[in-house]
Length: 201
Image 1 (tube, rainbow, N blue to C red):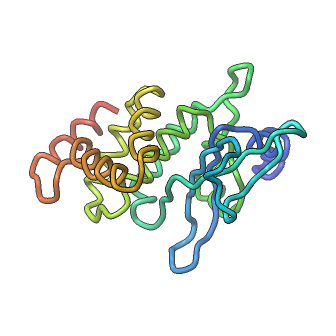
Image 2 (image 1 turned 180 degrees about the horizontal axis):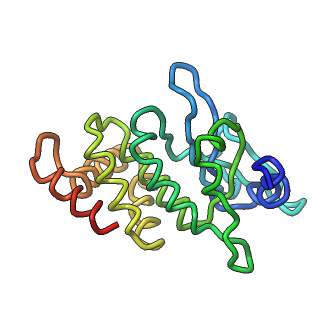
């Protein structure tokens, strides 16, 4: 089954109710493709007009909030890790739905929305947020590998620290997590730790 047919059969109807959504898209002034992760939240007073609201079950509405993006060299470096994370996304029967098939050379040519469960969504959101403003690709990969090893609960907790307590607290949390998970720029321990994680993968 080709990717388009697989998408229409297994995934097209799922992303509209999934807790997280991964979009393969294009952005101006960024190399294509760009991966964007969004979190679904119920409607409330904090919604912004620019956010996409969708009806769920014909009654309530939900809002997709952007949590981060990945593109360029950081995407190329982290793609195998991201693919491994989304490979665990399953349907209600526990059968993998094949989201990882779209994070390939062929799949990344498509422009579509993919469903993520809470674990994969929280991990990708955390990776995408933390890699911003990190120029050293070894640190970016180290952060991604360490987040990938988190449990669903751990990833959700740390993500909440970066999204739920106002802009100043979120900025401090991001700064602290970047150091905790990826060390500091120029630290000789970064390549050593990265090599160990690669060897144990």
